[in-house]
Image 1: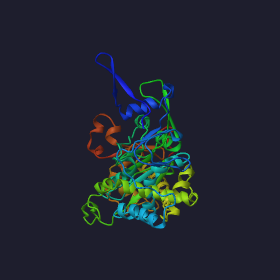
Image 2: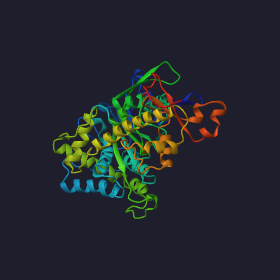
Image 3: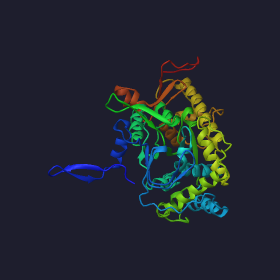
Image 4: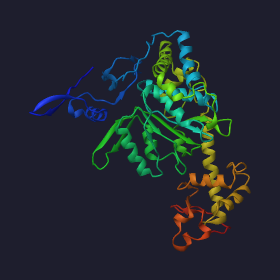
Length: 444
């Protein structure tokens, strides 16, 4: 179905029909002043409207301001009342065939992954915002990136664009503005690195509201975007601010081998190729699970998730009704770990400041000091000096207990910054207002 024929002038002022890029189409249709239908997103797979109607016909759908371009995708018919056999087949195709070889830490982690796969198909049914999905692993090579790609491929039809999170809040705000201008189906922050703490006002705002307002780069104009994407990130044991932790769903991989990248016992040797070849079947499976839930009355799930009640109700209802259990069962554990880690590190920084003040300190010295304090649970019993150094690098620039953690060489100046004492050393920088110090200890 075509609503607009685009023309350009050629030769002797003759008009010739042309095609325009998807990016330009979004830009034109997003501005109501043109008198054209408003467009929030272009999708390449069938989806459900806010009323629960399944959209399978190509073209523009005004009720959800979405343009459906099948792009060659063929999906089998989804029955209005899927049979028990169809639901079983759909569930097994996702849970066993697609996800069966991933080393999920628990059933909850696996079910949260299924929820992420279903989300883009039902995004219009979810009132309000949706949380950040964090695919993390205990070690490298566990398959985080692969899991992320195969979960969103059935809806997108391609790999998601990979973005990075910066240590700079200003840079992250600019990046999010650029991303959301393109109305993506999925926003994917890949392999969040050491020293980057997941948090900040801009990311919290983008994941907390169904709309996002910002000023356009190099302009005085502002824009407001409807946020219809799924939020996704990967990382190895990433660190979160308290505020961002409560906006995050954990999907954890925990291989039981030291070198998971050496595994060969997969049912699908190249899972990403298999997922691409079977995209139509996987899309059918996702749609069938949703339709089965709707046929049974579309009753919301009983899970609670502050600020994301609409998301939890819809996804929880689908998963419960189709017997994919464990949704959000790891929520309390994740929050406890995030809060406990933050509190313990704040205490550790206070102890560090009491003994060393703002002087440079080597990881080995700090390791000895912290091991003497058994009441702090920083995992030091299994953390050697090298691992503590990595933990410090992942927290560089963070403010804890009134101090900012920095490399000594980046803070000191002149000959002092090049001295042997500062090599591979760390120091604390007081943040305003001045940190509260206990009396009786040497420092600075």
